[in-house]
Length: 214
Image 1 (tube, rainbow, N blue to C red):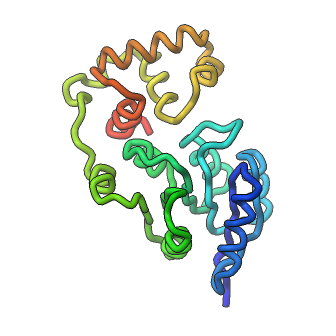
Image 2: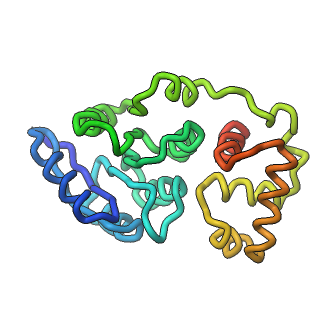
């Protein structure tokens, strides 16, 4: 019997050990490696060619949902299951828009992760949020102020900053990426929030997803 191969990506060694024991205990699954950083994950994915990667989004040196895109670019064909504590609907939609095939909250039962791995291996999408209202919000997002403020009213630089914020980059990372000072990036973020009538970063993520920037 061919087993589904899995690469575990999490910066906590104890979490990786626990996931390995859980996954390897299944008759149809096999862990082919563990990585504690995105860079290590990219290298290991190229070497081991896993079918599935379980990916924590909150690791030092990487940028939230943008890590999904980077890993998929480095390892075409791999299917990614995000395993994280983040449960904001816009954040989840953003991860899925960038190519994740599954989403499991770290507070979920072990059985949910195993179900997610098996479902994704069969070509299905698996989202576990433990809340019907949250799931409904993910699948059928409410229209936002993006309807009232057209994206074409944003400058090219504002669109750039919006896209980077939605991908999870910090102000410093955005500054490095687009060649601005951190203070200027903060100013752009504040201007975007005011211009678009938004209150939280999650709203910016939602707008970016709905507008096709992610």
